[in-house]
Image 1 (tube, rainbow, N blue to C red):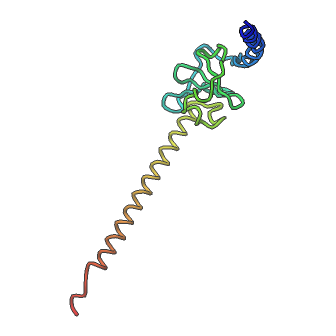
Image 2 (cartoon, rainbow, N blue to C red; image 1 turned 180 degrees about the horizontal axis):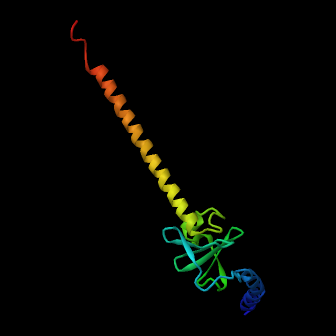
Image 3 (tube, one colour; image 1 turned 45 degrees about the vertical axis):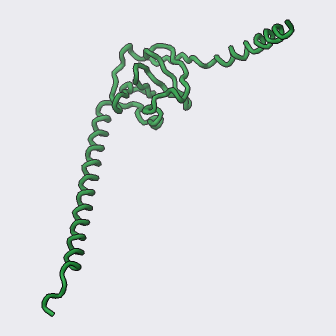
Length: 152
């Protein structure tokens, strides 16, 4: 009986700590967004609210906001955002540098894709040039070593 009383007292004494630990788990973010905000694709399966002061991402059926290095999510842009443990945040979001997509819009997205394509094209061209030079050097090397003195 004493153990039961001690256990009950212990549980009751921890209850306020558990309640305090829950404080701050929910965060009421007033984003001021329409029910269906305009979105821009930033990577496959990840969108961001277009031209907004804060990065509000949408992926996997959730709206996501990063505040002070912590991630929060909600099913609707006007709902209460709930803290999400780091291990439960989609890896695609975690890898996005903070602030990269603030005030993002379709024009910036198109320009970034164009720059990416141009950079890839330049890399491919440089790679082809390197291979051509290597083949030229190999042909040259084989030519010098492959032929002996025939008239001596």
